Length: 262
Image (cartoon, rainbow, N blue to C red; front, side, top):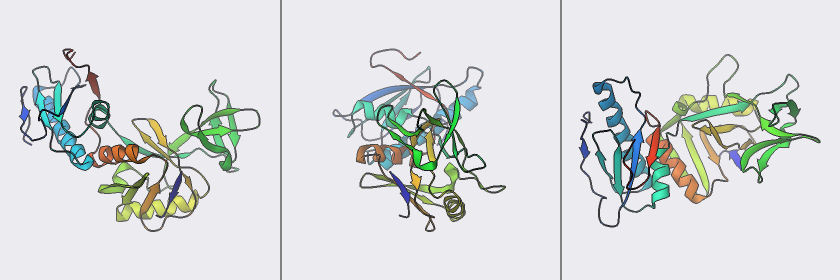
């Protein structure tokens, strides 16, 4: 893995008319987790934003516009062709809130890590690597301990942070098996300064709090484009579509076919 140069509000029974709901379409039902005390007006706005995000993700993935039916209990039934059901659930159901994080470092530049039991220890940057056993993109390996790096916000000392908004709108793409991020002008400046500071260390990409990639920074990135390899073509395509669509406004829960939404 590397990191280098490289609307109108809907009512309770709203229906988004679209193509893509033909006989070969898959249908999934997702339940937006709208807080119980949300007003009808705000709930309608959340549903409208959710449908918009679903449409954007479908477009980015290369699908026809999906048909989305919102039921009386706010469940969403999504019908679309050109995709299998598990992928559709992942594409449309994951909130996909992105965070960039950097490892917590000691004053000596050692990466701070925790064992599964919570014991803290430190390793050199080159001892933070992917782990096939746990399938984690980053694990710490010392002579007598194995653990997980501690992470913190990817931020310059006293300066700007690298965030989801640092990437251009629609700036995620796929190149072979790699995920490519194209940054805004301001984001590119932050990226350049941060990668110059963190050369040799990993940087973490978290989706919904889960570490999905931890590429090691091999050199300063001065062209505003980060190439993150190691995903595989299918996974990179899915992640790019989720990120280009943006995060869902609320969490979603999948509802098995034929089961009423909760």
